[in-house]
Every structure is written in structure tokens, then in C-alpha cells.
Length: 403
Image 1 (cartoon, rainbow, N blue to C red):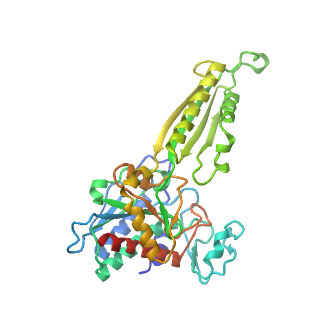
Image 2: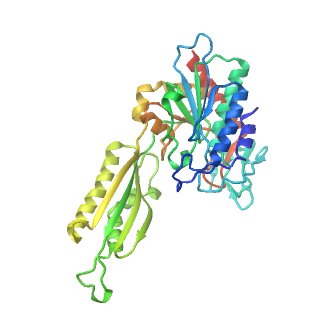
Image 3: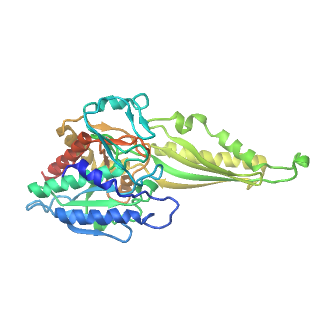
């Protein structure tokens, strides 16, 4: 079976995760796909196939004879889709021999003005949703490519070290690595196969933190407020205005970090500002966090101690620190991509990945592209050709680690 054929099947499963939920998985519907994947993995001939109570799916292909001493290699993808757009009743559409122009769907136009990369896909078979939902290529394409590679390895008897396979829930809400069983997974090294063009390698990501700034005001009747009222909303505006405008997401790119106000609520008595803080460079990351503390201190000196507080919590860190001692992962990925006839594309991730969390937890885990574009919305797409290349790259990696 081709990778795209698996994708067309997997996207019919509704697996949207829910960041408001406190359960794991955050939505029980993810288990439905997990059970189907377990059944398929057993049919393909994988060993030790299981889904735990948290909807983490595991399986392996034991090493070929004579390769048992080789390091075990893992491949990981996630089952959930992002809550940013509907993932229910996905109806995939194939566009054979795509002409490179605008793709007009039901209520959605994927246009070349907004997405100039479309011209490079001319002649391919493009896969989209019908325009009313996301496609789910993020990351069901990764699942499809991993299992298609597994099928070829088992069917053709290709030489391989022990291969460890895992599919996780809740990656899109930042919890995909929370309950990942690294010892039970059994890999020495791994790759996530999650989004991006075919031929992409990602091994740098943001250091990340969240911040909640709380402002306590003092409310009196506005008619007699002179020299008495402290309007928490106005002090909150002062706080936000003290952060550099050029460090907002809309003014940054590549390795430039930012402080992003995601939500605000409150009134005269109390106002809260919710931020995410990001930077690839740890020193700059720490400086951004320290700036929050300094601004709070200055406003407290102006309005009174306890007026402003900033609660900052680190979320994840840049994986490159954990990848560099195992840089064969990147060198071999480059070779695998070149063998597939592509030039490797290496860009810093302006976000986080399960691989970053897993790398810091002891499983070095860079990311490989799946051939997809425009994730988290109704303009999401992939191509048959991109998925074939991504599958080929996985097979090339297995061959390299078998040698």
C-alpha cells in the first residue's frame, strides 16, 4: 500500500485534541485510531504491539540476523490533529496533475499569491480536504509514511537494526511527550516524522516559557479618584508597552525570539496578561524572562509593592544541546535525503516539538518532514510524490543504520 492511501484512510478518523481537557488522551476519540493502528501493525507483522491506557501506541520490528548489536532506531508520529480548525468529517480530495494555480475548494481558496510555493508542486497529485476542515496530514502523513516503510522492510526482508515505532496522542496541545514510555519504547535514538516539506530536518527549536502577569488595582468612584485610584487595566497597558515592540511575533523570523501576548482579561480591580516567551538562544531567552521581572519591579516602585507580579514557568528547551553529542542523527538524515535525490533543508523550528521534550528526557530525537504544507487550517495540503519521498528517506535511514 502506498503512503497516501494510508493517509486517505487515517484522516477519516476524528482525532482533534482538546486543550481544555484534563484527561490523557484529551479526547477518547484518539483511542479509536490507536486501536485501528494496533490492528494494522499486527497485520503487517510488527512485534510487541500495544496501546497503553493513555493512548500511546507502541510496536517494534526486531533486528535482522547479525544486526542485533546495532543501536535501536525509533520513528514517532502523533495521532491527534490541531484544535485550530475542524478535524471532524474530513473528506480528502485528490488533484491529479496539478496545474500550479489557485486551488478552489468549498469555502477555501488556496491561492498562489498567499502561498507562492504552490508553483513548485505543478505536475504532482495534490491532496487537500474539501475546504471545510483541515486535512490531518499533520501528522497522519507521518504515521502513513512510517507504516509504509515498515511494510516494505518486512515484505522485502530488508536488513535493519531493531526498529521501534510509536504514535502519540495530544502533541498539538503540547502533551505528546508527557507520558511517553522511553524505556518501554526501547530505542537508542529516534526521529519524529511530523510536518514540513519532504527533505526537511529540524533539530533546533525555541526555548519556551509562559508568563502570567497579574496587576492588582484599587477601585474608587471615578468622580473622586484623583491620587487614589489605581486602574489595574491601565497599569497592565503600561506593562505591555514596556516590552519591545520589535520582539512581537509579527516582527520576527528565523532565530529571532519574541514575547507574545496571547490573552488578557480584567477590570479596574484586577487585570491579567498571558504571554508566551520564545528564543532559540538560551542567554536571550533568560534575558526576556528577566525583563518581565524588571518591569514588574519598576511598576511596583511606582504604584506600590504587590501591584504587579509575574509568574513565569519554563515549558521546554532547545533540543540542539541534546542533539549535538549525537550529530550522526543529522549527518545520516542528510545522507538519506540526498540519496532520495533531494537537497536537505535545515531550518530552526519556530515552535516546539515532541522531539525536543524527548531529547531532554534522554531520547535524542530530531524531526523529519512529511511533505506537508499549511498546517492547522483548511488550506492544509500534501502531495503523493512528497509522501513517497518522505517514505524513501525513512527507508534510506534504516539502511544507513544497518551498516
